[in-house]
Image (cartoon, rainbow, N blue to C red; front, side, top):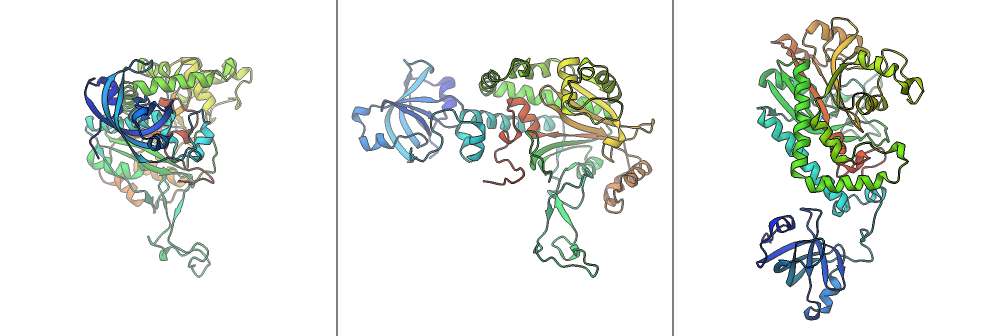
Length: 478
């Protein structure tokens, strides 16, 4: 079964005059003579030339869009436009039929909304073939980057009893009969009788456990699924998504920013080098899509230029306070062009503000630091001013925040004080606080939402289109 050559390899440098075997799915079959065959290794199809006069008519009728076939024949120079080589078939075998009356992916343009409804088949389109090859490269590049830096890949738990963000938007894990759970004398659900002997949930972040690893292994990273039970139906939110979360001992905020910038540039550069064809296709797709928009809503940069823009520019580093001053004094704010007007210090920045800083003001990626402690998590190191924490967010064009991180609070008394202020039970996180009791050291880390990264690199407009099987409110299909 494995005796085949992938179409990408044949198109890249096939030796004409040799016999080859290719296998894939039929995209189109014209004039009973020309098959456009695709095997997913590239967006480009390989043309198969059929000697229809000497081919069984029953076989020809089975060569339909979506059918899986195996073809053996001579690789020859192509006389037609659009391809350098083609295969002159000597044998064709139908591996799997596809009923043309029922196959939903006919050779025509389909909307992304329609393709979401048939997510099990959308991989076979050019757009999603390109998106998921790019996603694959980005995932590999993430591992490659950290492994080359000497990081340890740590698997943190998916089932946990902690809420790392303190937001409470968690999916609960239980083996109780949810209609009739055992209860205590006071009528509360008795989680002591549950599978784990306590309330448990799906993880919202691997960070806290990642910090434990960093306190012994120095540099670790996690790369795994995380879950948020937010009833959010936006183009930027999923209930299940993947997070990359490095944690580094002996790092301060500046080291953290350097690491995050280096990671982003590395993975974008890797995708540009290894998925040039796919990114060029996605760039063209986006240009076509933008033509439907009013001029003022179109991007100033095309996709390729946007990616290169992030590689060519050092990221601008400013404090939250400086950013607020810029935004408050901007003509955009004065003319009330922001949906959320900036009136003063303490505002939680929205995507429109982040994009303004990147796209209009600095015209380069921006790292914002030193946010008000009231809008950030309990574990961030407190500054001496008593108002701000050593947080950092990286803002990208077209997307806003792509990375969020901080130097972590290593001082036990300050951490406990902040947890008490935010009503986070210290007794439940005794194991986390132990890292501050026994050999505490300065350390830092960040989180990169993988789908946000894929969204940026592919230029897709909806996060549901960059994960194979999206999970969101009222949807757990496939």
